Image (cartoon, rainbow, N blue to C red; front, side):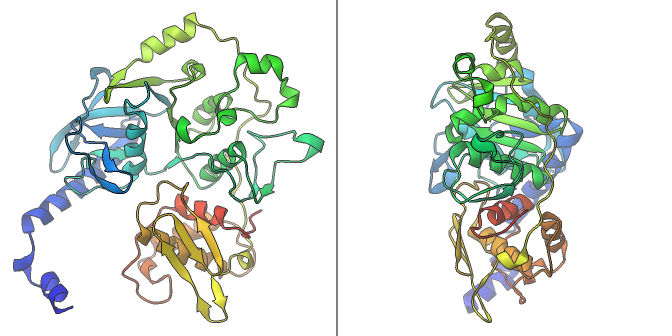
Length: 409
C-alpha cells in the first residue's frame, strides 16, 4: 500500500510524457467522434490503424499486422486538436456492406468499429478508430430469455394465431433472439446497427427467390432483415453496417459496399450496383406492415431482486461475460460491446437500483441515463466504489432483457 500511495502522490514517479500522450489521444478521439455527425459519418478509421488483435484473450495489437490503407473514394480528413489533420476511411450514414472472402478481414474491421464507441490508449492501434456512440451490435443468441418484446415487424402470424406484439419466451431460437436484440437496441435509442453474418441467423437475414417460390409468405412468419433495412434507414434514420459475404441480395439496398481483400479495404460500390442491375434476383419484398421504433417497455421492479437474503445484496462480475445478481445469473456473452468487468459491476448496481423503484417503472432507459448522469454515480451501491466503469445504456438494457424472471411489458 505505501508503494501504491507513493507512486500516485509523487510527481517524480510519473511518466509525464506518457500522461500527455494519453490525454492528447483522448482529446483527439473525442474530437473525431464529435465530427462524425456533422460529416454524415457513422464511423472513421484512421490511416495506418492496426485492427487485428493477437488472440481472443489478448487484446494487444497483432505483431507485424498490415496497417489499414484508405481507398481514395472513401478518404476523409478531419482536424483534431493535437494531431492536426487526420486522414482515414469514412463510413457514411445509411447502409454499408462489408464484403470479401473468408479470412480477408471483414469481421476484423467490424470488431474494431464495434469497439470504436470507446476511446483507446495510445499504442493500441485503434486509437483513431471511432464510431457513432449510439451504435449497437446485434446478433443471434439461441436459448436466451425474451420478455414482452414487440417482434411483429420481423416475426408475425405464428401458427394457431399466437401474437408476437408482446412476445416472451425462456428459450428463444436464433431468428427470434436476433429480432429481439434488434428491437431492444432500437427501444434503447440505437442510431446505428452493426451486424455480422457469422453470428446471425440465416433465416432472419435472407429468404431468396427459390425459397419464396416453395414456401408461400402466408406460411412463413419471418420477415427477413433484408426487407426491413431500407425502412430502418428511411423511416427511423438508423444506419446499418453489415458484414455479408454469402448473399448478394443486399446489393439492391446498399449505399456503399467496401470489399476487404488481403486486409485492404476497396470501394466496390459501383461494381455492386452494376451487378444488382444486370443480375436481377427476382425476389419480392415481403414486409406487410410499416416499421416504427418500438415503444419502451415498462418494468415490474419486484421482478429484479439483487438480494440473496434480507439485507444482503449480491452483485458480482465474473469477467466480462457473466453477471451474478442476487440468486440470478445473466449471460452477457452475446453482449459484445461490454469492454471490462468493471462495467459489468456497474451494470449490476444499476439493475439493483432499478429493482428498488416504487411501483411500475415506465421508462427504465431514462432512469439509467439519469443515474449515470449524476455526479456521484459511482455510489450506486450506497458507498463510494472505485471499481466501477461507466457502461452505456444499451448494455445495461441488454443485461436487463437477459435477466431471467425480469418482467418487462
